Image (cartoon, rainbow, N blue to C red):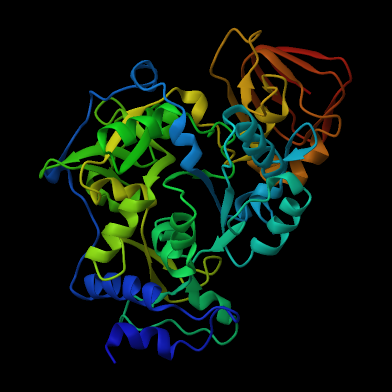
Length: 465
């Protein structure tokens, strides 16, 4: 048995109901062997160049109006996240975000609306983790109309954490679950293969997968893209948007020295090149993580590479217990699903409007979606209200008092203030907001102790409580 295979065999714990398949082991072996050979996964400036000219979604719509490809479409949502950074212990998609509905409720309603609009079957399939599966499927069971001719989910893999000092599997008897980690959302392709979901989808005539994060309510399929892929034989499309300072740490699009488009994540950037990585003028497109995949191409690629889709390695150095810096350093061997743009021959990128990227990563984002600057359309899309004159809104809530969802809810017990006329909102201190509060222009609210903004208050400019 090779050392990489023995990493799985010798690890003393793992998902009790899921032993690694040969596909998962083959993928992990490839990355472990790259690690052992000294591969860092870094992609320096000397090997890439910026990308400036891309087709945009509007131009593709003008040339590819055929809706027929929607008959072979499946919507896949990445649903493995727990939202721990906001204090959640369940699937992030179960967070109530608009009109009393969770992300998953809204996504299910979006897919049902798509079926009606295009008279197509369009399944909704979740890529769950072991921690998110049960609760998420329970929510989908409340949406009986979302049932389809394929399973509602498949489960992403787990792989061992690897000690930095000797490249052996980490062991931690006090908390065995800490010995394992998810291999990044690039596990999409491995999990599709290992679970049998890819075969089931192809057997039932599905060809195009639209993949996006479950917390991005702007990610709704557009029929022009699979029509474009079908007409021009494109195996993979990444939706990218114009990069701003808010996106400077996110993965950006570049062109490799060999001519391929590539996705470079911050973990792949040499430490001394972080300034160039963050230059939004130089690298002007970021990956929205809305991806379109030809499932037939995934099957072909896996056949060529011994059952795996060989994505570039991302080597993340962490502590075994992320909350305890005294625990040993480990490598988490990960991949990014967007990195497949460098794997599939003929892969393309398309520039899309910012509204197709509306994720909730922090409570700052959540407050904006709670507010009146967004609404749900008749077909369940999250849309900006037309009354809003300024498209960008910066919300900066004091992390000491608002970082967790429960803290946010406690300090906005009557819901979000009206932000239609607001250009920025900064809250510094332990402040509770009353009902029907309105914010106008640039607002800064500060308090040295516990304080309250009363009902019907109109906030404008600086306010010290």
